[in-house]
Image (cartoon, rainbow, N blue to C red; front, side):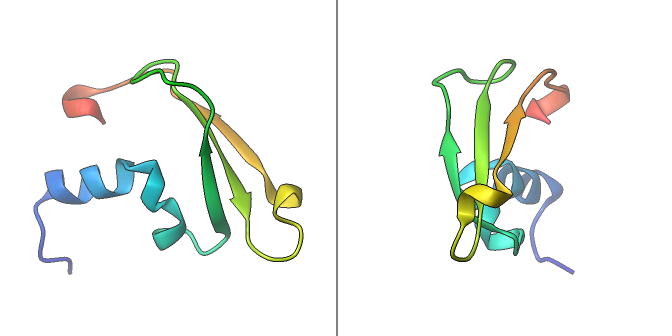
Length: 68
């Protein structure tokens, strides 16, 4: 159990600067544009000696209720 509201947990998980805190395979995150919401793009880089090898790119294509 996490002593937080669902909204607090969602906000924490939705903050890309925190991904490496909850995804053990991510060493860093790069924001690729300044868009907020739909169209926002970022990539994650892996941990270890060759972080580019584990690079993954993401694009927000839909935003649900309350920004989810």
